[in-house]
Length: 576
Image 1: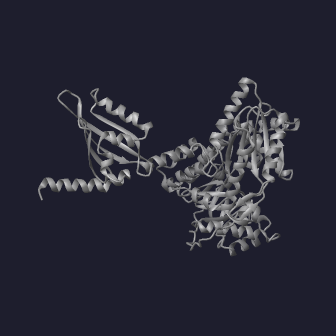
Image 2: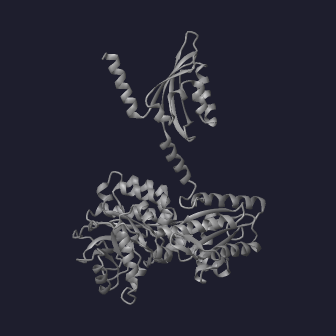
């Protein structure tokens, strides 16, 4: 075999291995010559179907053909290379995406006489791009707007209403007791209920109304041109549609009800954030009224007075920020075997000018309501990292709010602080609440991934307080879960709580997660939890939050989760 033949065979093998196809297009004769596995690439029966430019162009999608012809025309204007993407119809009528990059051979008159190039199948890249674009706007489970797009629609409705004096309303719709469905039948059935409710909302609302999924078991609805007098009609219609039709699920028909919170605009809210917050408040009122009902946000004189008090508290917090009077206290998280501390959770305290120490619970709700939480979370992060830099044995856990879990500025800040401080990052645990993690699972997953790449561990706090499933834990990829204290406080008096705790432990162990039990107040509770296999405990039984630095260099290491053989069966969860 000659050297030229050997080289050609090597070229054919390389092209075949890459999956690309190479072409040589003689323009005067319109003949195509191909190199590579053309029939497999285009999914056609033979080369005769693409043997000329005319035949090949007949297979290109009409929407893409014009662009390709424009690229070829540019060669007659002196350009020597071209690049484009287009869809080609295969033998089954399906469209397959290709990237084409070619170069022209010019004739004596300076016009192209031959094109040579490479075509590469890019279906997978296009699918991934389209999926990314889709998830940027839509909820993966229901197909409705996600929280970001819903907020944009609400902003637009508020702007339109303000400009043209049109009133409207924003609704938050929560499925009642979805956690019981999940516990009894598994997350697939709970998901089926959520999808079914979304379909019912599509059918019972107007075409001009906007529906989105906020996360978990909640939907948001923007009602445009809806006066307050018509709001009860819309809310009752949704309630009736939900409760009067059973949902077909893999476990059989299930009846569900919903609770609704509403905020009218511009009467009760002038911004999207304000409308969402007030509708959430109204939803909680509806749930307290027994569920299967609706409530509208009403700004009473009592609430007005409360708002004024909140503004005073907010100003005190801002002044404390300026004066460096926000400090950390430290509560130990201990080994259930030895009761020795393995890490300390940072809890914020505010020192008043007169020396009084104010617990976070007295001002954090106001901070969150008035939009100061990002500033507070950033200060806590800075304080914790400074402490760990000065104390090489310190291992700390800090809490971040749901807003911070989606705040790119906070994320950039921690990356800047810890990018070159792997040893410190590995001693830091960042806690996010379970409900925050479920608000926007995809966004929260990106947040978790960034922190873990730095070396930090991430914990899911208040585990069991929301609707969590295998799917959520798989997407979030956290390192640790902290069992909600509500299940621990009455553990001795109410043994039924142990049923829920065991379900939570089963779910966590299936993902090989470290487990912390919060709010352990007695040694009897501690012993019961230890016997169930809980390795880490936190609560007043082992220490209250203290301002003094607690490290003496004797802290134990975090226990490694025990590897388990996972049974392939659903864990039915979750109590909330």
